[in-house]
Image 1 (tube, helix red, strand yellow):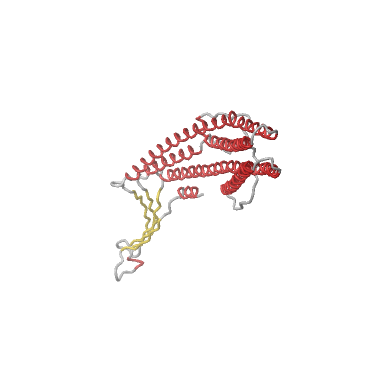
Image 2 (cartoon, helix red, strand yellow; image 1 turned 60 degrees about the vertical axis):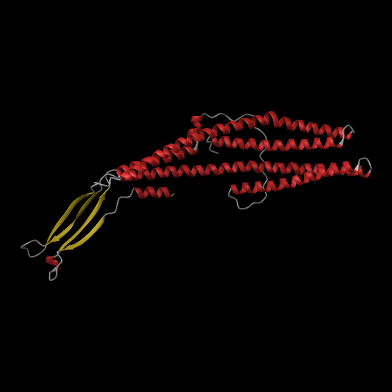
Length: 364
């Protein structure tokens, strides 16, 4: 990870500097006797908290990077879950319309035989055939949509082979509703809060680094000097030692300190905004889930059963001559519409569960 490399670099001790020089170089002199030679090392002393604070900034970057990695992972999981239920619903719609076309073909064949025997008018037969063709068009469109949804699911999963797959999870509501989660627990579990908090801590560490950067820079100097003293025949070897201090007279890192302070305040405000977004997201997804579940239990399931009963009654009445063809077709269409509405409602319900679990910060 790049952040770990930055932490390793931040903890390294500064390299020393080596300097070699000659003094009193003039024409006609003897180098070994008349020229002064200097060789010394300069070692920066990182002892005023700068190295420690650089490491703290790097650690803040690691924490932020890890939180961002986890956020991206959860976002991918969430997209896959939503794409799965969309593909599952499209597959169910395709299969439902395919079965309806097959069943309606039997009705079409039955009325074709009755037409040949002169028992129904050609107009009634054309109505049945028109309904059959409408169902066939709807089935073709549903097959195209199912293929698109399947490809989108595989793409979200990172697959490159878009072969046919069969999704088997049932489209039905669970017996018990999801357990409620307290808002403080949601705030503690949401990865967005971890990212925002880690970013604030990193900005705080950077502000502290800019503060300690205003402290003097210390350098230790130690080396060797060979010099020619008066009234001596040969040079004298001596040691050189010193301490170099940077005097912050005009540049006290004021600009960087001010910029870091402003950035810290900005990140704190973004943290507050993230918390507000998390609260709003949780409450909205919770309300959507409750509405979807209530819709499934009180509306969609009874609607599906009522439409099935009406379709069966209409078929029986039509077979005994108790109703006309239009009522039969209307009953068939109402039954199919109820089944399609149930599928769409169940897909929305399952997606609302996925959205609520993501809003609660659940780790799948």
